[in-house]
Image 1 (cartoon, rainbow, N blue to C red):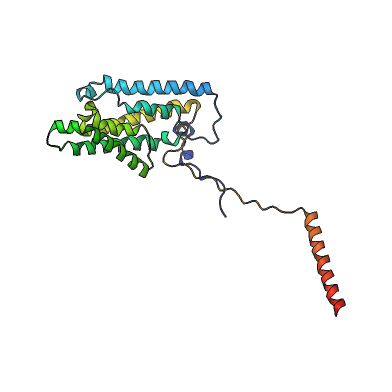
Image 2: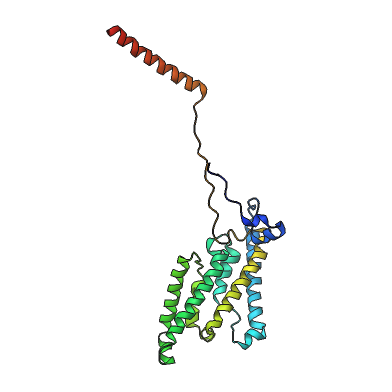
Length: 243
């Protein structure tokens, strides 16, 4: 017998005061008016981006390592993670995986171009490194189901932005920390009057619709059977008369 209900989420096993902030709801969340969504989108984007710039732009640890106050692609991530929170491209798997894969791709390809004999030659081909990094990152995100449009810029600027280029491999933990900060702030802000995420790793399979077998009313079924019997009796009578 096939179950018609979706598999319950593992988050349901957690206490409500934890599962609520991880996006679990026992029943569908009520639809909010537009102005509620606009207010929380503004608060989320303003708060999340401010935290990023405060950490990387004011911390001596990151300043000494020439880390920029913010990786520009996270401005685009804010649109998805605070404004379009139900979109598949805004879910945690896409946010975390997309940015990290793109950063890794951008650094690897740029390092290969760094093997060119002169710095001048690298500058001449930096456009090629950036284009190749972004295009490769898109394919890798598609293959891993982590497509996150802003992450294309994460791969691109690893090659074309001198401030990011000099960071080298240190770009990876900066991106990972930035994604984590955006995710944590999104979990807090988006779950006050909305719900985020819709899913963590993969969307829940849809419930299997039960098969409905239509049955005739008893009166119609009886009349049909009586008509069939009358036809059969008529045929038998005709054959008997012929004999």
